[in-house]
View 1: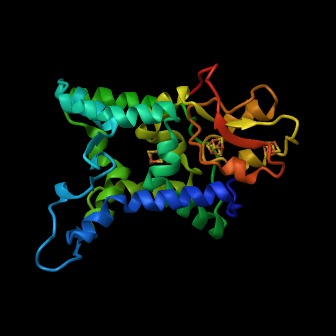
View 2: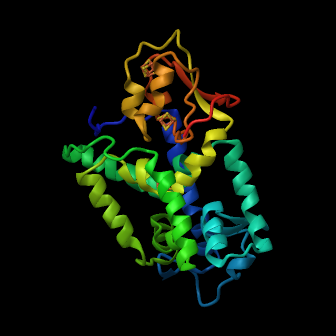
View 3: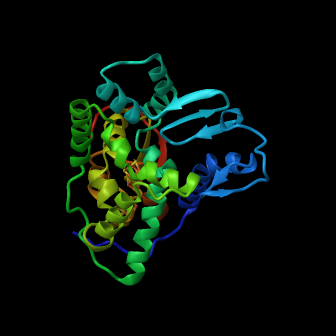
Length: 292
Ligand code: SF4
Ligand code: SF4
Ligand code: SF4
């Protein structure tokens, strides 16, 4: 077992990913701000807003939004609503664009490139490294989060409430950015304490049900980290850099697979950036073996 490292090499993919993460965090608040609506709980414009939110080209949140007239729903949020309400509304078709996109690319690309919690926890990671605090690398196995996702759906059906949406740190961070709301931020505070003192990225690697849902559909993604076995020197630096469970790289580094097949891979590109021999790249690979 190796310990979490504080210093991280920043390469091209990492820079691009952070730019996309910041753009996605701003995606819904900048149009609101420009139209004179509140952001972070403050009025940005004068007395009159120039447009209602629904007249803006982009409005909503990562759970439910409208972009250039296209309605979009987070598939896991929609699933919770379906099982909680025991009915399927036609609005549920709004999940299709996002579902198709992530099934085609790879489910956890949402985690790697879009989710604001990931960016936030990478900062927490960096702070813990600077403080020199040592934590366990994988105290909880990665298969736990699809199980948590299934448990969330069962519980939502039993109590008739989409329960993860009530406590989701993703939704809480979204509300904080948009409205300055502190509602639900306790979840994020608890996650930060656990990450600082117990387990390296334990929430995103092993516990988050939304990550578990995307891990499950990620097993069939067309984009993968591919390896050039002739270039690889088995230094394991890619595993030390991996944002997910480092063991997802085992088969590729051992020469037993030509790509990282696990649906857990979030295509963050940190392994690619850290490889001293340029043995890794992200590319199209038709899935032959399905793996969580
Ligand atoms: S695991 Fe959950 S919190 Fe972490 S990046 Fe994915 S969706 Fe966001
Ligand atoms: S960092 Fe590159 S060279 Fe080192 S084990 Fe990983 S793929 Fe091989
Ligand atoms: S295998 Fe590479 S791209 Fe996939 S999560 Fe790990 S570091 Fe990121």
